[in-house]
Length: 368
Ligand SMILES: *Cc1c(COP(=O)(O)O)cnc(C)c1O
View (cartoon, rainbow, N blue to C red):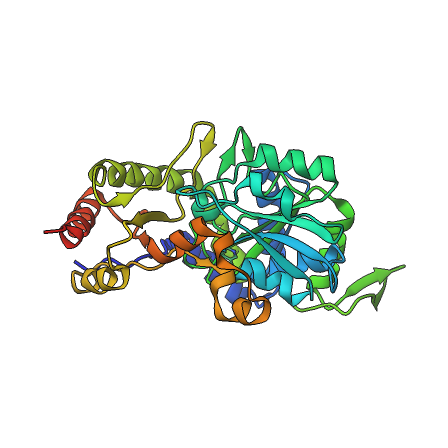
């Protein structure tokens, strides 16, 4: 067997639509981008969706449009993909890291308030691995302290908590269409928001700061070029139609893993009541005495691709050398960083694959 960690499911419909765009000669930000923006806004349940070149660009644009910059602080979960914190660095602000909850991989809401200062301009939550963060207490803090929430929902399109979709609960939401996510166009991302002014500002910043004043083109900001191409948008549209089926298939596979891997050396991911998990990643935690890197090597030899799930961001070289943050503040993020393992989960897999992967995992972690 040869089972990659992730493998995009690109159908004939996507290939036909991309070909159509290529033949049309209209390559950038045309009618397919407009159609994608409309569909995403409806799907997430917000007024505005703005398609951009990747997930990191969405976070950068949101922070820029909010006017966050030098001297400002943004709360960021200690355990996430580094892009969450890098976007804060890119605008010259400082990420203030908060630990996650053990086995849940999302920010611990009870640790947020003690890290707020008069410089805190936003609370970034990450819906890690496709499971929504524990939003009610975070929304309460946000309202009481008047600090907006940014949702990094890169992994969580289609996920929900208490009937509310990810990307619809904060001031702005951010999604990615990287091949590791449930639907993909290679590189791509989308911002969601109900705020008219923020949406307009992001549209301007995405396109060189261009604005039309009395029908005349002008440049009103030092903008970027973070546009999405039309063939990328064309690729996403059919996948977006399939997304509910994709999530359903993934959750069936996740249930199979959960039963096959119960009572083993792993802490399995949770799916609490009231949540819709989009299962972007099946992330398990190994017992401390197991050597993860050796296990990854052994699994490669059996044709199984696995990898670390995410980083304890303050422990990475850049953040350590810049801020020298005491890693003792992040015991749960450190344990997830050191002992976490993402294993294959996508629609093309079947029960046979899940059984094989589970058997190999159990076999190679059996302590004789
Ligand atoms: C994938 C991911 C990103 C970055 O998205 P790109 O499209 O790769 O730039 C940001 N945050 C999280 C949590 C992610 O998983």
